[in-house]
Image (cartoon, rainbow, N blue to C red; front, side, top):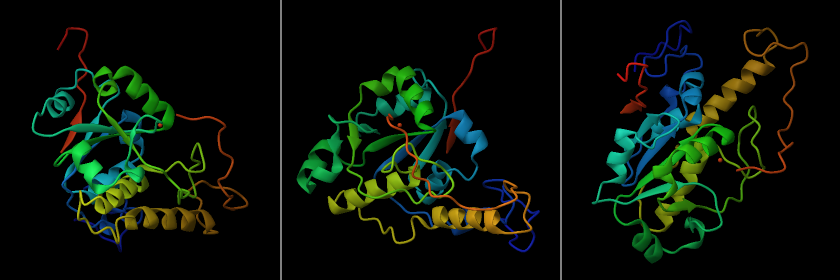
Length: 247
């Protein structure tokens, strides 16, 4: 990785961020039998180069990002869905889903099969809902979920509910459950390391007295993110957009 940690003006060629805020140097890619497909909203892709979807992709060798909003006619998504050798699933909350937290190894193997694809909608919760509403091909595939009993480590970003997790925390939880179900054998000791390093950097920027390049304010204070909403729902390939000439 071409990153000069001594010179903050030098940018990382992967995330194109200054080396001082780059998290790529903290990644340690893991291999999973499950292939994770991150369906990333364009706003998330273009705005959040240190977004948790990006860093999760960097942490997983067997993963890919597909950028778009409506994936109904997306060639790559449909190619995956039509793969008869492997099953596809959508990680999305819901009561009728296959709950990984409540299933044993035999049930997981029977339901997921070998080397499954798991789609993850990466964006804000409103964006994720819109992506699912527009993508008719995703509405019919089986969904998986898990019981979350921990709070997100996010300090800067407000989650919609106390038990909502970021993308990397969600994938970490899923892989842990797949490990327990003998579907995976993936060491996750430092999987959240880039996420934790990003949070450390954000806090450092806010608390540093002479730093006015990051959210300047007279009194720099980190408030507890516990004002949750009352109700909620939640290779790189770009979705092709036709112009007025149909090209």
